[in-house]
Image (cartoon, rainbow, N blue to C red; front, side):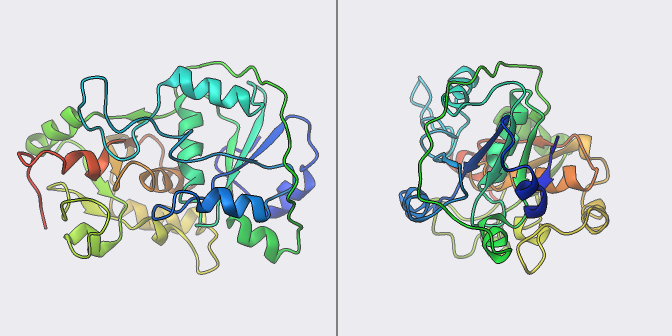
Length: 281
């Protein structure tokens, strides 16, 4: 069972396993159809496509019309129905990949852990590592049989905006922002209406978890780097722009053996929607 990362070599060896589902998570925040188009042009053999906006997120507005961020989590039962339609059961090994160093695949990894499914891993290096190893792509689209996955106790933690607000005064938790340094500083903001970051948040760009070839750094190196930011992962909160790349930092922490950090799903997009909330730059 793989629970964090899986190498191309291991995936090739187990590609024909009956209890495995491969999911293509490619996406482009600026062009929401780019991932689906890329999938149609070529994907890992047998892989199914999942869309960040349509299957891994819910509506940005709650039932009362309150903005919850750009990519709020869906209802857990709705997500379970999505997984069943993809052929996933309780004994399924899920492998997620993208073309962005795990930027979007890590969101799916976290969400499966959120409903208590441990056997989920991100393909280290993504589709680029797959093709660099000489492995083929396919344009065939599989039709899965219905899965039977069920909900189990979560393997993750999350916090609400109320808890993040409370932390402004208590500073009991270490808050880490996964966005690029310029957006963290409030510069070059092109996605959210307000530039800046949550007061007190530290910055760890999610791409800093990667080596130049797009694969993750070693567990030892990640542990050394992250330990300089987070003294106790069980008292840390990961956030980003909309709760997506924060999952990359959570995956890196797991790879490093620094487990227990929480996700703030609404992240900066939810935080900055209310002008009454303070902004740091």
